[in-house]
Image (cartoon, rainbow, N blue to C red; front, side, top):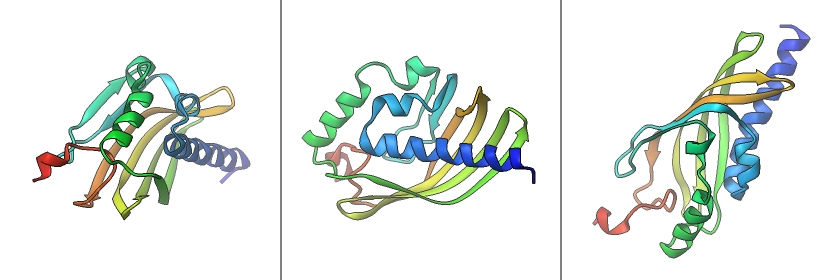
Amino acid sequence: MTLDDLLAREAIRQTISAYTIAGDLRDREAFLAVWADDAVFEFAAFPPLPGFRFEGLAQIDPEGRWRRYGEMERTHGGSSFLRHNLTTGQIELTGPETARARTYFVVFTDIGPDHAGTYSDALVRRKDRWLFAHRQIRLDWRSPDSLFPVVDRQARG
């Protein structure tokens, strides 16, 4: 492994961590800063949560989504805190400007362990930064009492 490989891997870890911290803190600007302009962001459905696929920054975060989501959490009994914990991660440099990463995560809220899954990423280097070209989230487990993401609690029965 070369010094350039090590530096690239560390920069990729920084991007993955920055996404996590920005999301937990609801920092819209920091969240948007980790995406390539034409990135794809998708979530595989995990009932009762619907899936989604957004293409490009305008779909990933149309103005106001973050504010509306925070309001929905407060109104519908969401968590008072949210912490994504990254666990096992693997990074593969696929070229001088491209990489793939797979990272396991577990999320804690007021109830303790809330949900867990995997991030599968394709990243691209833009100047001195690595950005998400494609991020897919898959949940492997979700507590029946999960507080996040907020879903219609009446639908759970």
